[in-house]
Image 1 (cartoon, rainbow, N blue to C red):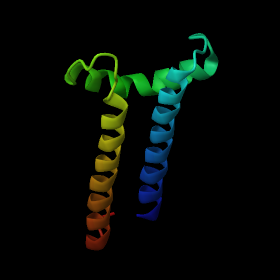
Image 2: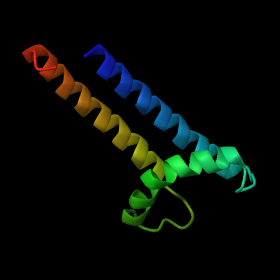
Image 3: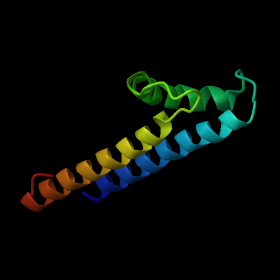
Image 4: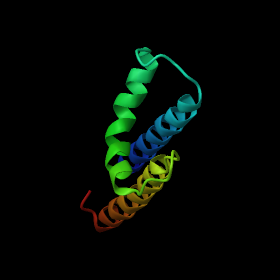
Length: 92
């Protein structure tokens, strides 16, 4: 149980850091061919794109990173509850 909970916690932290890095990098103009940019965009864009399509146009403000970070936190909490419930029943 501890390994699964630790893994979920670390994965959530890494994904949040990547999204925050992407937001920060968007304020600074870096070359799109920069290897760090390619990695950050490659990981974050599949999470942000579907949310961006669902949100209404806000005139240049992108709220999708906020929504994705909230969704990551919600999914993390749900998985923690499920794993905690499974561990108390002895299934895991």
